[in-house]
Image (tube, rainbow, N blue to C red):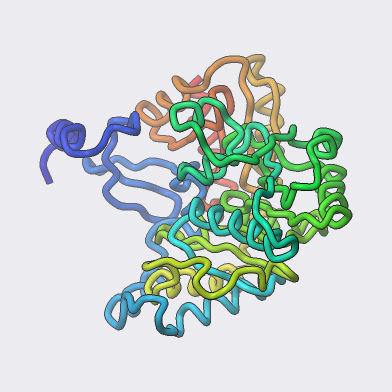
Length: 395
C-alpha cells in the first residue's frame, strides 16, 4: 500500500468531491475496533453511521458471505432466489409486516415508500395529485424524491424544484400535523427517532396521535427506521416500543452489517397497492446481499441483541447523563438504546476531529452541535468507560 499522504492525494484527484473526509485510511476492523493503514487502533462509536451492528470481522457473518460469494451473486428479479425468501421471512417475522421489497439502500427504500403512498391514493381516488406530510429537520436521503421529504432547506435549495405536494410539520407537535391535512393528503412520513436532526425520539402522544389521524383520514403512516431500526433502540424496530404499527416501514443500514441493502415493508392495503411493473431494481434483493441480511437477522435473534442493547444502552445513558451534569458546555442528552446524542452549546466539529486524530475515538455528529453515539450493538460496559475517557481527553 502506498503511504498515507500519497494515497489521500490520489483520492482527492480521483474521487468526486462531495465529502470533507478526515485524514485517516481505515484498513480493517475487529469487534468494535478499527485499524488504519498504519496499524493504529481506534474505538468505534460511529459504526459506519449506525451500520455495523454486529461489529467488524464477525466470523459467522463472514462465513455466510464467503459461502454465498462462492455460490451465486446475482440473477436479477426475473427469477426467485432462496436467500431473498429466507431473509424476507425473517424480516416479516421480526416486524409483523406483510410484504417486503429489497432495495440497495435506505434512500431507495424511501423512494419505494413514497410510491406506495401515491399508488395507494391513486387506486382509491382514481387520480394523482396527492400530497404527503413530512417533518421539519428530518433526513431521508439524497435522491430527488427522498430529498423532497427531507425537512432541511440547506440540503434542498441547490436542487429545486423538487417533488411538489410535500408539506412539513413540526416533529412532536401534533397540531402542526392536523393543520396541514387536506383532501389531497395521502400519507404522513417521519423517522421514529430523528437522527440527523439531532437525535429526537417521537413522544408517545405524538406518534399515537399521528397514527389516529392517519386512520381517521385514510392516510398511510410511513415510519423511517433506517437508522433507529434493527435493534438500535432496544427494540427490533423503534415503533414497537410505542405499540404503534406503520402501514409502511423503511429499513437499511444495520440490516446488511456493511453490505448495501435496504427494504421497504408494508401491511394491510399498502401491502397490495403496487402492481407488477410499478417498481423494480436490478441489484436489489440479489442472493449475495440477502444472504448477508438473512445471517444478520439470524444472529440478532440467536444472540438476543435487543436485550444486550437495552442493558448497555442503560449504562451508556447513565454515564452520558453524568457527563452532561459535569460539563457546562453540554446542555442536553436524549435518545434511546444505543442511539443517543449529547447537545453542546457550540459546534462539535473540532471535538469530533480531536477525538479521532488525537484520542483514536470514532464519533460522528448530528447537525452542528450534537455528538451522536451509535456504536456497534455489541459494545461492552468497558467500551463505554473507555469512550468517555477518550471523550474527556478530547475536550
